[in-house]
Image (cartoon, rainbow, N blue to C red):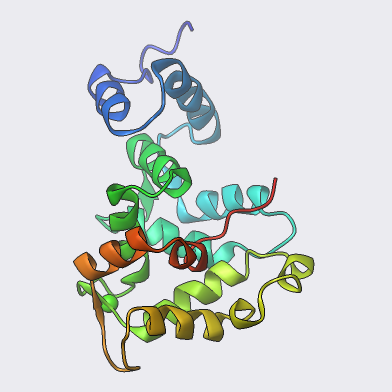
Length: 192
Ligand SMILES: [Ca+2]
């Protein structure tokens, strides 16, 4: 409420976000307020983004994952996210198993943006995900999922791929949609 005329949230962006995320108008205004406080110039840098992740994951190392997530949302590669991109990022990284989320997950894994996922890319992202899991929790993981390599192997086996083969976007989305185990391998939900 009040005197933030120059920095107010535009109706255009508000309508767009209401349509494309699950957030209400009230929530979006709240996010916007804290966003403006944290980033008065309206942009979040990669460093800011890494700090946000560090706050969420105080007992592990989310830095490389945060970098990959940032890369996947910084589509014009200018090194910053604006409010709209930031909210879309929040929404997609925390939402359930929707087509849009899986499209995003694909772009997260497609590190070199060439439209397909290699096993090397999978291993890189799964390694980053793995670093977010606190040590004590790592010791409780199933035997065939307790290293990044084992997880990458499992994913590759699920898609029936040889090491040098690639996964296309449609194939990836369909596979993950059909199998909750795969979803578990490619993301980390901290226990609350
Ligand atoms: Ca690729």
